[in-house]
Image (cartoon, rainbow, N blue to C red; front, top):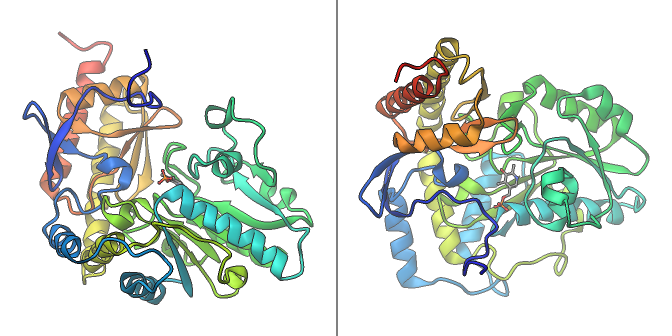
Length: 394
Ligand SMILES: *Cc1c(COP(=O)(O)O)cnc(C)c1O
């Protein structure tokens, strides 16, 4: 008999009851150090006092009014994002896939409205992940996402992530944009270097293409900058954001330059829930913390501490963790044993992490962790390596 909850996930058999900072407590009272953060979502940890206050106040005032009216929280959040980024304008929605799809529609509309309607194609990268809508799986075109869901949406050409020759060779008169994640998250914390992003920007400029960055996982402080592309010293034309921006409340955003958003006029796009007052209260509260002086510097510092610790771990335990990848608090360990086994062992020892492609275990802690949390995670990772090592004494 099919379960009441549609069985589309291979879930771990644990139910959480509450969270506090970097910890989650399950219904048996067991405590876990949360280096999963709901897949990079609870960027400020659980039950952050500022978020709790902001949401509690908003809950008592107003939840939802629709986008038939102005929404003060949207105007405030958009202005803050614009001030801090390349963008001139922002569309709010409820998830990453929607934010990505807004970017896709914006690009198609740009081509149409600027008299180049034949330029319907977008170049994407192998190993990419942009969400689970039909358009976003068509763009990523990975077998595990698309199998059984054909026919896919037309208009995507895929190249190897990190390969500039392939990228240049794939450009045709029909190409309008290049879509890339600064670091691939679901793909396995794959990083092609900041030079790659800089070069992709240069290719876009050379061929008159829009650069569409998916910063859903890399953005909102995860790498130690508000957005990862800042490390590369470049700016995109379009960028989608979600995950950490709501701190656990569903929020997505598509940011764009005025030039790229030329076609996004009244009636062009919409969302019933998108940017509702409750969601905007959450996201504005997240930004209050992330934009406070010194916050991102402290993320950068703690990210480097975690990275150094993981590098040393890889040196000591190469059979279990042959490789470290990532930047800041977006770290990955490629595993010797199947990553599912490593994840289960970590959980038994009280550490939550997330699987990814390339047999990687992702460590995506809240951005508010301290040195002691890093030490605790490294201790558990080491303990699990010893336990899983083939020659481990019983
Ligand atoms: C999670 C993620 C998405 C999809 O976000 P949803 O909120 O699950 O729709 C898209 N792109 C990247 C890079 C992601 O990490």
